[in-house]
Length: 445
Image 1 (cartoon, rainbow, N blue to C red):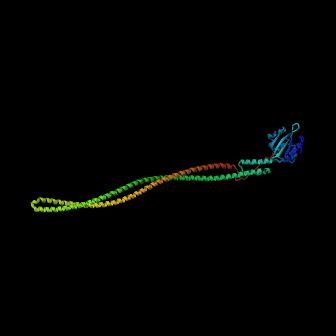
Image 2: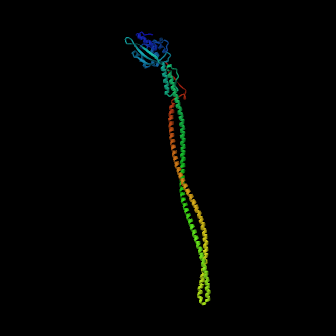
Image 3: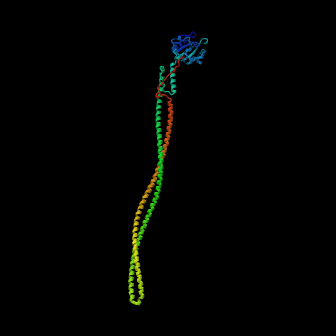
């Protein structure tokens, strides 16, 4: 242990200095910064072999050229000479030119007159702590730039090994998480593209179905109009068929009445023939009587001449009656012949009308069935039109939903693009090799 000549001491001072010498690096300066003395801890901290290597030299040998020329350092020793204390962490340069960081207090020491006679510095080497802080700052700076591959690979003090491990493990976890998110983003892109393709195909199919339904609706509309026209025509035909059937039945009835009338005419003709035969018989008898009267008149001579004239007239009338009767008989037979022919024709016409009536009834029934079928077809076509309109509405809803789905997929794609842009700011070992964190220590000038 040593004392400077100007430093007053007592037993307590000796004990304090002994303790300080054991735990801290200590150096003594003149008020102007000239080194007076230093303990072994300080000498070793700064990389020198012995205190004699630095005694008599100025404090500036521990500073870099930049720090030596700084404005703060120009006022550093004058402020200490004025009795001001300076404490904090300071960067110093060792004998080999390496940075040494110390936590130190510069304390002015006053003499019996209150004047600053020297300055003592008590320092602790915090280079290891400062080193790990620099590595952490460098790693965090890399992380700020999105580089998740940075790791602390430089050796650190044993007491800082846990910090190094925690930092490296944290970045490794973030890198794994980012890789997982990136992989998920890729899968989401694939799903989004698949959904987009599906939505596009659905749009195309919906449009195709919509066009096809439009054509089908147009065709059905034409069919419906045609069926409606057919139904109307069929109803008119049904009415005409019913009217025809009625007229046919009326014709059959008239034919039947005609046949009945012809039969009555035939009966009357036969009766006329019988009457004619009676007249002929009367004419024959009258003629015989007139002959007898003429014979008797001839026998009577002049007295019967008048009666002879009457007998002659009666005979002439009888002859004319006989001739008329024969003519009537002839006409009656002709009438009967024509009536028989007419009856035959009427019966034939009646049979034809019966067949026509039966056919007309059959046609009417067929037309009625066709009319009912046409009505059912018209209703069926109307139902199909309604169903197709419902399907068209459904297809339009599907098309609307597919459009909305495509819009949602586009939004998803836009969001994924934003996510990809964010992910591209992070570097992982999948994109490039792991980069160790380097601590750039400034060398002494």
